[in-house]
Every structure is written in structure tokens, then in C-alpha cells.
Image 1: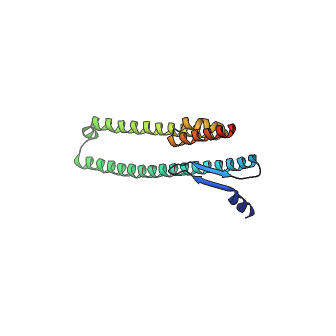
Image 2 (image 1 turned 45 degrees about the vertical axis):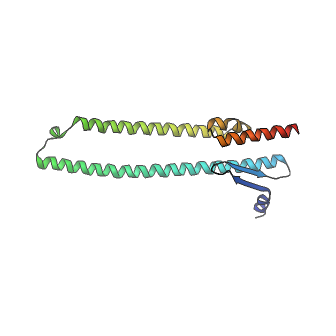
Image 3 (image 1 turned 45 degrees about the horizontal axis):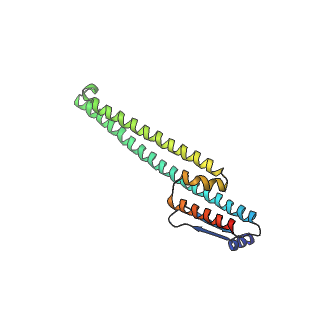
Length: 171
């Protein structure tokens, strides 16, 4: 309770409007301690955002897989019913086959597989990018974040920060 009270008094966290950016201000006896606290808060925030994103993605994938399972079951049942109707009507499988519909079905499967592969590639690329960004120092992160995730507001804020830093050094 004491640590919470101390941190609450010396800490300010604000989120930029309509963005996922946060501003962390920490007052402390030493600049190093303030930086360490602010960086730890940023790390925890980043990790919680990533966990939330992963959780939502996993939930979405689970829902899609469940939906696909239901559709596959419906399709299987329809195939069984079709086979039954063919038998009742004495229609052979060869008579009923239509090469165009089989080609379309195979084309749909190939297209879906390509989309899955592309989505996996996007995920792997983002996971690699996240991993490398988490290993960056704050200075490296400021230099690279604008190219990794282009955002006009972020670029503007970083330029303003650089300007203020230069004015501070010159003062």
C-alpha cells in the first residue's frame, strides 16, 4: 500500500487520443530511477497489449475453426444425402460427376490454403518484428518505430520530442 501511494504520487500515465501510445511521466530523486520505472511500466504495458492481441487473435481463430467445423459437418451430411438420393434414383457416381464443380471445389481449397499461408507469414513477420523491437533500447526504438509502423501522429510527436531535446541541450 505504501509503494502504491508513492508511485501514484510520483507517476502520471496518459494515453494519446485515438492511439495506442501512452505518455509516462515519473518523478524521482534520480533520473536513472525515474527512467527505470517508466521503462518498466512501458514494458508491462507493451506485454499486456501483445497478450491481449494474441488472445483476441486466438479467440477469433477458434471461432472460425468452430464455424468451419460446422460447415464441414453440414457438407458431409449433404454428401451422404446426395449419395442416398443417387442410390434411390439409380444414378452412378460417374453420371453425376461434373468436372467443372470439382475444379471449383479444388480451386476454393487451394485459395483458402494460400490465404492461410499468407496469414501465417504475416503473423510470423509481426512476431519477429515485435521480438526485435522489444530488444531495442528506448533511443533505438524512437529511431526505428516510425519506419516499422508508419504513423503521422507518432512521427510528429517524435519530431517535437527531438526539437525539445535539442532546445534543452542548447539551453
